[in-house]
Amino acid sequence: MFDINKAVQELEQVHTSEQLESFFQTYLGKQGSLTLAFKDMASLSPEEKKEAGKVLSEAKTVIWSAYEAKEREISIQQINQQLQSDIVDISLEKEHIETGHYSLLAKVRREAEEICKSMGFVMEYGTDLVTKFENFESVNIPLSHPATEMQDTIYITEKDPRGESLILRTQTSSMQNYMIKKYGVPLRAVMPGKVYRYENMDATHDTMFYQLEWLVIDKDITIAHFKHIMDKLLEAILQTKVETRMRPGYFPFVEPGFEIDVRYEILDKATGEKHLSKWMEILGAGMIHPRVLELAGIDPKEYSGFAFWIGLSRLAAVRYGIKDIRYFTNGDLRFAKSF
Ligand code: DAH
Image 1 (cartoon, helix red, strand yellow):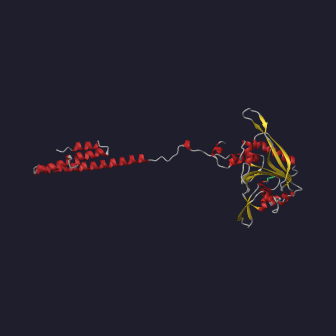
Image 2 (cartoon, helix red, strand yellow):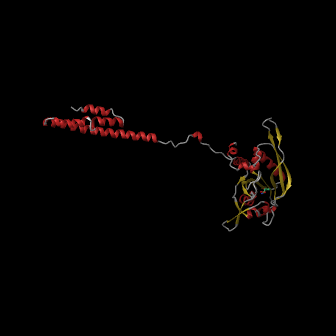
Image 3 (cartoon, rainbow, N blue to C red):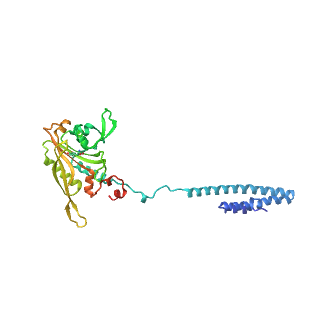
């Protein structure tokens, strides 16, 4: 007689779809023992048939429902396994993430800005687009003046809301009038910013470069104040002993104007000895022209002051001994990463 308990026990041991298939063949398939048991009923007497039929159809119901339950269980198991093995790890390993850092120019600029702020200077960047008045006339450069040619200006076609034509500023001196009007006097201001000139690029010239310009206005300001403040600022920014010497220079917005040569102490890492660099002309300066003060509403008989500037890339080049300023902006990662 068909052993239903044995079949149920065997089904309990089934864990894989292969085992399930072989269970099916053993009991439920064409040659399976349950199927054959039904066939064997043909040889039985009518009473026996009735009895056996009852037992077998009960067995069939039990085994089929257990079989189907098992089938579901195994297919859920398979789906779960599949889900596990299909997981794609989209996280990146931390070691491979490179964090960026400020470019050398930004670093030197930010340090200089902090030093100036700690020395009581107000700071503003201004805008890159300015009017011709701001860039030229407000600093005593009439539009007919050759100085407008001296700094090869890049003009743009758009006009500002008042219909005035705009240019890319050629100098941070374009901030002077604005700063004096905004903050009044006495004034100590620093204006770091980008300036633009239509120039051929070479090792020391670029069409866009950064200037740092200082402006100091007060009563009884003299050249001695200027030299002292400039020397102190340069020493703080360059972090070394600095000597400066002044020669006459011409800039329309200062009178007198100076070209400043700088030499500074260099530490020879190999020998540990210090020596002085060659004189380098890296600053422009002067006592503010009375006209510039007047144009900003300040009485030049009451107030005087000085202005000076330095190219940021020159500053960074001196500080880090870099020969070609194009490295600062050409995007060469070998350069960027070495600082
Ligand atoms: N604005 C001048 C230029 O870009 C540089 C300059 C010279 C600025 C003398 C000054 C100064 O403040 O006093 O060529």
